Length: 541
Image (cartoon, rainbow, N blue to C red):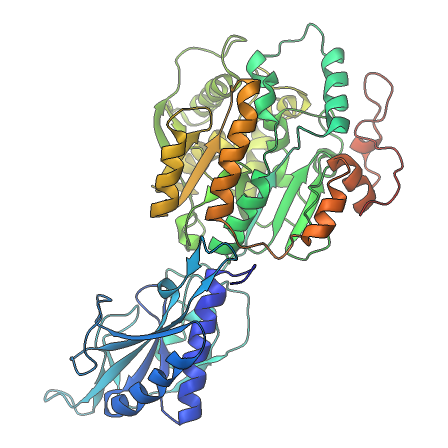
């Protein structure tokens, strides 16, 4: 039982165990690109099958190691059966034994047969099953060492040196390999933070008489149930190819986050608004309009809300084609007709505004909304939208609360803009949406936990009654801790987190993050105070 584990780490651990065992026994082998990217494959000459079976079976005496003989379909068979494969894997569980990482990431030893075809002058070795490259190879081939990323698209392509013995046929980059960097961007707010609530209430007083839809003021839009922790755990475990995680906040950090960890970087609103917009802002549309201004952000990135979760291991091609074209996931739900009005829900008004601009720009009428799933985005497309719709984009950035004139850029407009610009294609994703306030949600969550067959799911709540929030929190905590029990590398120890939890998220940010003087940070707000400024605090934690 361990506190930290990931599928990729187990994939590598299992392959290392097999290759090191074969090396020690002096058995020749080469690594193969398995047909299933979540497993590894090692080819051994059929003539050495007996010896290989013997040394691998000895591994079963090690703690938490399972060795079994299976056929190509994964069913246990006799070792003498033709095409038999030896499957080796560690079993790892969390301290609560709610989640086990095991055979799904096994290393499998397959036995290749030496043959001399009558119609060919040289001998060949033939695979007992399919793989991603070839069913047969010349008996004599060029030995090479390759990084893990050549053997599975689940591993990141980061220019790491060769490590695994293979053959030249498996060393090349396939047409389906994603080689460009992909970042992840989260937006997060802790609506329980009293300092943040004070900023929000002051902004509301200044907005007296302005057009603000009551849905935009619903407290459930800002309440924090610690979803961010578990969404990040899902990303770390199931998307190991992400290069960098950016967390965009209003001068807030959660008490469990190690801001110095190299995997994640906190980005404050002032860093991306700079000389645009009106801070502090409580408008997600405004914040989203500035994401492309994150310093160091890669061209390709995935935008994630903290109520979105990745449900199982995914390849980068779930979100981007290997040639760089993005994918988007249309919803069967349709946009309302007519122009945007103050009476529309903010998301509806923004969708109508998006439709008007797509019609004006490309002469096409859009009718479908997008699924509320992680969004695959291109920074250059976001920049192009701002160049072409400067007034509308900057107007969205200037609205402190959701406004009828807003655009919803990364969640809708960008996808259609990319599509009609030849930079995105529609795709499908196995997805579930759960409304936390719905009475059927406990059954829905139990099904998700038991099956774990969704690529992504959203646990959302937009209009719950105040009295139901504690019940929802308990239900959500029970589910998320069972589904994502393994801690992320940037989570602080529990005792440190407990000490830091005595302070507000704003106070933690003030004590932990370096201060940057930017035009947006220094621009006075309407009441004469400095936007987003935080008073000096004593060090926290």
